[in-house]
Length: 124
Image (cartoon, rainbow, N blue to C red; front, side, top):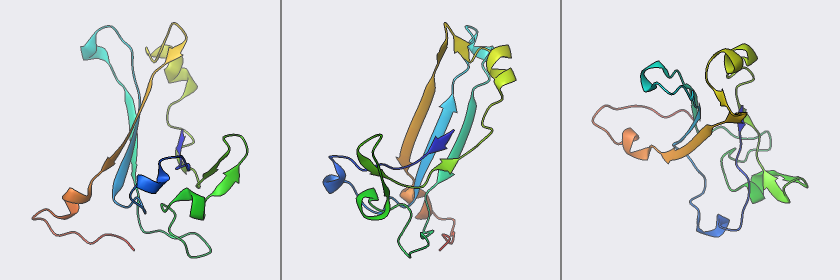
């Protein structure tokens, strides 16, 4: 399961670069008993890492991404997990229901956490 930014028509109103954002991806366990659900979740946080040519990885993808004819957009490098969930678990648990797999993706600003009482040093 991988995550990447892609350019779009609303890029002009977006805040760039998208630093201090957390991308959370959840594959939902659809067990009817909520107490038995074991959803699988992973998250990543955007940072100040630069591309080989010195641009911020999480900047506007029109400026730093690669054109993808499949979507007609510019998209950035994919970040994520090759083994987020095993095929065995997809079938043994209740992740698949009526051949449907539910995936939630959240992209949230966590800048306020940096300005808490506990000092932290962001990576550069």
